[in-house]
Length: 110
Length: 110
DNA sequence: TGGCTATATAGCCTAATGGTTATATTGTGA
DNA sequence: TCACAATATAACCATTAGGCTATATAGCCA
Image 1 (cartoon, rainbow over the protein chains, first blue to last red):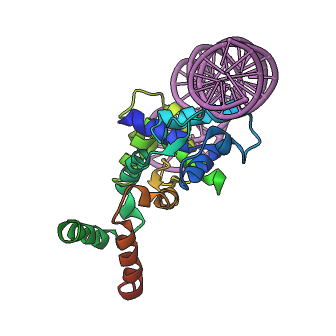
Image 2 (image 1 turned 180 degrees about the vertical axis):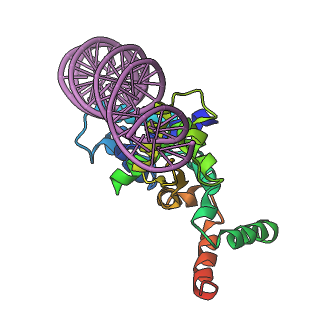
């Protein structure tokens, strides 16, 4: 688990990779499409994609001639959960919020 | 802002540094106390602390002969906010939750 | 099948990271 | 003030990361 957190946080520590994730939040995209906004070489982008994929933040698809990437939200949830343990330090209303969530699960989520 | 995110995510990508934060979640601690659980040299810990401090995740105090560290939650909130933009991808009840938060701000937070 | 398109891999370079030991700095208290 | 305790800094080393160019691979289509 420590290793997963290492990989995910490390992957997110690069602005190019975060920008790639932001792009993928709008839907799947090919490597060429993902590379387009940057002044980096294609291999550099492929490397970034490999880092993201190994961290579990994205997945590769298969479509005709291309290998489109899609977002893999579970990895982001992993670190969101990690951060949640610290939430009480900055969010005073967190306890009430947590109560609400429990109720929501019990009453509406069926 | 990109630079801040870089620094914070990068600081969090190391398990030693995350363990240090976890320790500081229980309250302030001296460098010696923070170093104790690890088999690392004292300078190695000081380096980690410097990384955490430069990322804004901790602060140094001054107390007699020692320089105790304390948690600085704002930096964690910074990345929590970043992740929040992706929350919809894994949390279906997020929209309702968001509504609730707005109401909470308006009615109870005074 | 041959060539084009899309992407991946290899090999190289430089800079940054994380560790070490040795040493400097700073404050406390006898 | 002197010595010790707590911490920081310096100098060094090995590994990793992120970039590049050149080249390999894989699938589609004429």
